[in-house]
Length: 278
Image (spheres, rainbow, N blue to C red):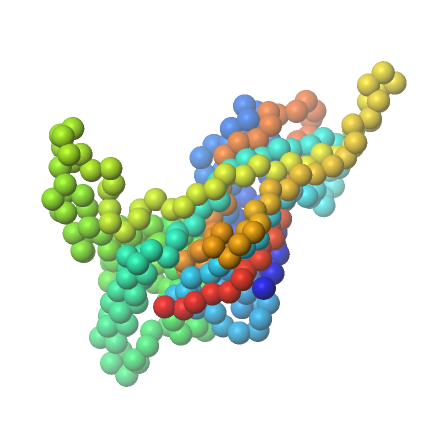
């Protein structure tokens, strides 16, 4: 088993748009406040000293999410509880077909632009292969472009747009498959053949600094509680296509009294049993 660990926004392969987390006034974060993305291929490439492809399915058997204090000029004097979603795309047959079709399309497109080059390369030109992100906003290192083909609105490859593109190209909607989606009778319970909705697991983590009270209340001791998922059997491992795990914060405790808000970082530990390329 391979283990990787990192802090969102600091470690290689651990990306976020909000590195330092503070509590929200009403206990519910604004949508998009803290979107994280873990790129297992980059983290494992650093750990193993070899270039790993995103065209693979990774088996995650251990996952923990915790909080830790930020080292700055303000001392944390309280605590924080956060909750959110862990999301990933599972390696369904149509999901794999979608990525393989996208790779073939881009190879042909790049070969047409440069007939002397049989393969195409990532945006930073140091990796010969397809690199893609989670959506148009959350991108790992070295995401490939669509080569000016206008296949993606953001020009950067990502799973969300790739799934929509593939379903449109293959007629994978409920209506195109002959299912009645306009009337109650026979209404389809799905939208696209290639899963548009990722797999999801909710989590909660907390961190408490010691608080000195008055003589009657005493002292609140320090402590922390990580979210931990550990597969007991190989069949319980989380299968992650493309090596992308999204971590989005949604809830927290309400804002505490005081002039300065406490600040925390999110640390993630992941155990990977192995991976299979396709």
